[in-house]
Each structure stands twice: as C-alpha cells, then as structure tokens.
Image (cartoon, rainbow, N blue to C red):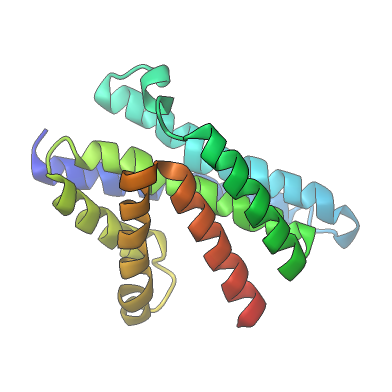
Length: 191
C-alpha cells in the first residue's frame, strides 16, 4: 500500500466513524428527555461502540482482507486490564457520577481502539513505528478533534496521543484506555 493511500484510508475511516457517530447522536437527540438519562447513556454507549469499534473494524477487514479474529487478537492483557479497570472505576466514581464514569470509559475505549489499534495497524503497512505514531497522533489531534482549536489541539492532544501510542506499544491497549479515561475524568472534574 502506498503511503498516500494509507493516510487517505486512515482519514476516511476517521471521517466515516465520525459520520456514523453523529448520525447516531442526531437520532438519540429525538429521545432527549431527562427522565430517560440512563437509557440515553446506554444508547450513547452502544452508538459509540458501533461507530468507533464495529464499523471501523469491518472497514479494516475489507481493506486489509483480514479476519475479524486477527483484528481483535492480542489487543488487551486481561489480568492487567482487570486490575486497572477496577482501580480506575473506583477513582472515577469517587470524582464524578456514574454517568460520567461510564461515558468517559466508553469514549476512551472507542477512541483508543480506533487510533492506537486499528489506525496504527493500517499505518504500519506503509510506515515505520515512529512515523506511524506521529501520523496517527496528528490524525487524532487534527481530524478527530476537528471542532477544537487547532493550536490547542496541537499543544495538548498531539503529545497526549504520542504518550498513548507509547503506552499501547509497551503494555497493549488497556493502559492507553485507562490513562485516556482518567484524563477525561480529571478534565471534566477540574475544568
């Protein structure tokens, strides 16, 4: 796969993911009733998992002609995930309510799976490890977070993404998910 094609496909996957997520949010807004807050959270979680995990995985299966099993292989180290998830859940529940805890856990899982796993696999087809991390981090900061301030995204989300890639490369995906989740909780709590 040529380098330009690889970057273009990565961008396309991110855009398609965002498109499906926003369609889901628009449909959910029809149910925007405070009496259904927990139901709304379930719908948000389902929408996020479909948009950020399932749909991009299907695209990756088609693009790479890979099996679904291979795309989910060795993503997590489950003992480490169990310990980190328990500790992070307790910290998050202490700092924020259950709804925010669930929302930020789902967002972290979806974004990390998409960028630190799927997009990284695609980028590694044409680039070396360092180049894939830098390109993936730029895509994370500039395309996924397109609605934010460009300068702020480059100063915050770009280096944060590099750290998350490092954690994934060293410990697998669970560490990046946990750090991303805690980061979102702390930003919510203290901003």
